[in-house]
Amino acid sequence: MQSREIARSSMATSLHSTDPRKWILSLITLTCILGASLFIDPPSIGTQILGKLNRVVPDGLTGWSVLTSPNWKIQPLAVNLSSCHPAIGRPGKLVNCCPPRNMLDDPISDFEFPDPDTTPIRVRRFAHRLDDDYIAKYEKALSIMKSLPHSDPRSFTRQVEIHCQYCTGSFLQQGSDFPVRVHRNWLFFPWHRMFLYFHERILGSLIGDETFALPFWGWDSPDGMTLPELYLNGSFNDHRRDPSHYPPTVVDLNFKKLDPTRSTPEEQIRLNLALMYNHMVSGAKTAELFLGCPYKTGEYEECPGTIERAPHNPLHTWLGSPDIDGREDMGAFYVAARDPIFYAHHSNGDRLWGLWSETHKGFDDPAFLNSYTYFYDETLRLVRIRFSDVMEMDKLRYRYEEIENAWVAARPEPSVSPRLARREIRKREREREGNVVLDLPSSRFGPTNRVLDSTITIPIDRPREVWYSNRRNEKEREEILVVEGIDVKANDYVKFDVYINVVNSTILSPIYREFVGTFVDIPGGTSSSKKRTKLQLGISEALEDLEADQDRTIWVTLVPRTESCNQVTVDGLKINYTEK
Ligand code: C2O
Image (cartoon, rainbow, N blue to C red; front, side, top):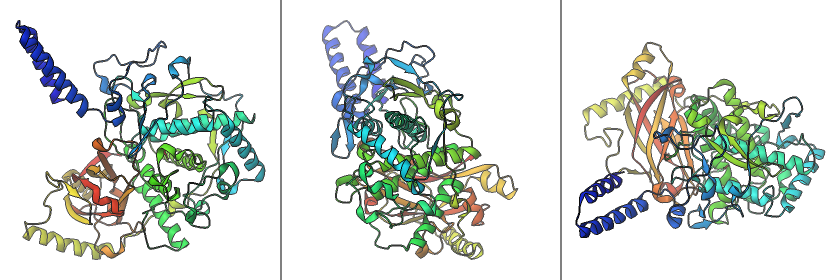
């Protein structure tokens, strides 16, 4: 921003000057400044390589927003179809997953809902309980899809590339030099819902079956906590996986990559359910917490929601091959959709979003609802679709087979009695008062930030509004613990966990109430130079269970879980609150 200001003022000076030499000098200065700002600003290396691209899609259809308002930050986000360029698939890997021909050459149709009177409902079923007929049908559809030529947008390779485009930022936003990305922000759930919607309809149309529905990998249910057998065979197989995680190995929804301690299947299931409870219930009380943060035209801050961080991210890495960089296929987004399990994995995430939406309010920000993007449908039409179009599954004519959600009842207990913990915490408080030279007197780590190479415990003072209104039993606020300015320099899977008021640090596990969430990051899809992430954790329910909701201070512990955390820095911690 600053360089633009300078640029503007030097332009003003030069316009008033009559000396031609000054003109030339000013021009040179201006070019240098603009050039420098171009080099500093672009969020992706892809953009730097290609420089400025044609930015505005001719928008012939009315009712769709074009960027004309001066207040462009509240404009809905849209994809600039003419901007596709090679981008970074994962660190060190430049990939081109652009469509083979310019999408603007195709006529654009606006999305229409399937007619409720004539369209049967597609029922997505539990992948561990499919019958042979269904499997044969899906196998046939998938093998036809895999046999289509690359020039056909319905082909499997093109489906894989669509996901690649939107995870690497191959397209730019309309009216901005920022890429369009669908991970680590509020586009995550709706974009993947759209992707599956079209993918499923294409599969169905290839076998002439209007009722065809994808299965879902119910990894949140004890009966679904292994890789579904069907994915070991035929078109469903993928050799780029970790065979040690084949059945009967129980999935690790909280995968730490290099964990020498193997849990028993029972322990693992208990751990999985506790994590699910945390990320579906206690930590997911608001739209931002569950769905991820706003992502608007020209803005860039990553802040993924609970389910995206885990189990979504850990499972990608858990299943990918340990012998291939980035644990491809599933471990690297740009090729993840090559593995057919990808679609069942995301179908389950989509199902969980549906469940969450039954009892919570999603975003109503027009900047979110009116954002739009494009997909080819089963008739090869290029369809323009708004994010508001995919808020209700009913309207899209599909639903999920109901299963028991065991995590609902998996509310964790404190690891020690709250009374004992309280005594210990009070002791710490007294020491803190008597000893000003405490490690970190405030929640900011100071100008040099803090490397996450070891476990950190720090006290944070809570806003008076929160503990005071809790004392008066006015609990309409959700308290949010924010880990700010997370800078992931590692080119590797990164995971750290967050706990509050831990008094016995030998029993740090999600099965205890002190656990308030995990940060998990898969490398790729961002430029390493600009990556800044914020982690937001809803902690009100945990504080209540720990009987600490009226305390003025809480003690936060950050626990690195991967070696790669020694290349992660954190700016600080703070407490926010928001209306529920
Ligand atoms: Cu778009 Cu599971 O990734």
